[in-house]
Image (tube, rainbow, N blue to C red; front, side, top):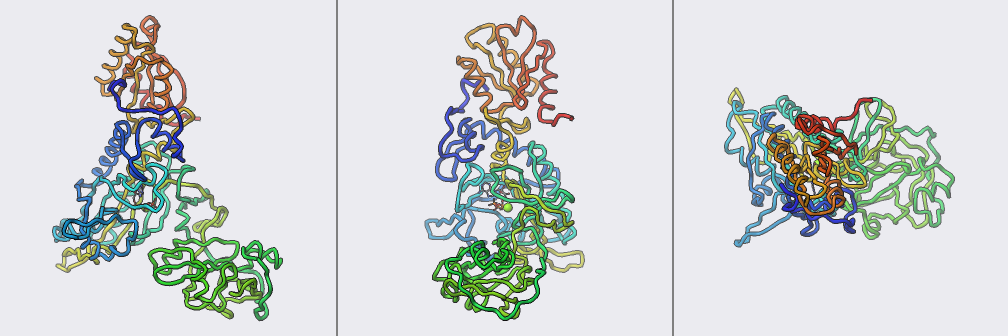
Length: 572
Ligand code: ATP
Ligand code: MG
């Protein structure tokens, strides 16, 4: 490709609408353009990157026995009604109707589609395992589409579904996919961590997310430096913390004028925050849910959601709180009605606690769990914090931000049972297929790669997914000698399979260098007035900024060697 013909309109200014670096740089490098919120056109450079990521994904899926197919994006409502998810999926699902008023959706995921496909085709245990995948646009009407390709409403996903005869065989499929994902993200040049994950709306149990460690990540993870434990904070389990206070006398109500936050109450009553009970009220389609945690702890909403079995939670408003006998800012577990109260394990291990009195400007002292209130449920509801003990080894955990680029799930028989997808085992007994599902966010992976690989000048592509590996830049394209040499270098690079680009534009060298840095080609070969005479090619490494000189005679293997080495960490 010649840059004079390349459709990559670069921008000098940082676009105001882009908050994160990957979004800014993809706009500036002429890789994407916005069509509407969360909808983007991938321009040719981005499309090349996506194709390279897809090729890596395909190779790794195929290596694990995956077979590629392509299912419709548009899916009939019936299969979602059959699985029970049509009503559960909520506003995130794009719903459409055909001319006969029949309901459809644009696929946010394809468990229903694939399960109804195989249920009529798989008959016997002899056909198993089956691993089918596709790479396709997915549609989710995200509440907050943002950060460019990181959270789109249309995005590219690879989704593979595994069908096995039993849990042991599912374990093997899961392990194969886990290993494939590790290979994929390594090959894409990303620094990532697999973490234990909540399985969310997809259901089932047993899941890992692959997190690219980056500040712009929307997910929070914890990891232990003493052992290999790592988890999404949503999922991280926590043990009970026992209070060392003795049980108090009978509870009494005291004035706490204007003290609405835990800190205000603790300061006013001269107690530690850990001696107070925090009550957080939510509304859900199952009514009001009140979560209780210690005042110094935070509520993990995902755990609350899992415990109460609701589809979604919203913070309760004044009227909802009043309807269950509470007062905003002074809500507590004693005397609440018409609400499902779920207490964290550590709340039940408290003594002589302070809690809201459900009366304006008043709190209760000496509250004893079980004596003064009995929650509907007791569970681990706490959000893990930096420094909390690792659930595996007890060492303090650390927190980091991550971009979820992939997730693997064991679904077991959730969908096969709901959709009646069965097979006959070796005894002729009918059994539900045991399933797993495995997603890679292909377009998000491209954004994540930029989040991890950039500097003040632009993107620094890992070679494996760079739109082009090498750009050949004649300093003066009007100089016939330079241009002829540039053409011949370009042609020989292409001939030996190097993904090369020739910047033949009649621009100043500085402009071409700036664009090359912004777009982030791993190598830039500069052809200047002295190149031919000196018999040396000047090669600049985008990642390190180093310049090396290669002999004009026999530079090709050297370029290949550089491309193979430039992303490798240098030995200490
Ligand atoms: P998130 O928690 O970030 O919303 P998810 O857990 O809902 O993602 P999955 O259903 O696990 O997503 O989808 C598989 C993969 O698809 C994710 O790991 C992610 O890489 C990608 N993905 C999901 N939603 C989006 C989106 N809105 N834009 C881009 N990629 C996405
Ligand atoms: Mg996920």
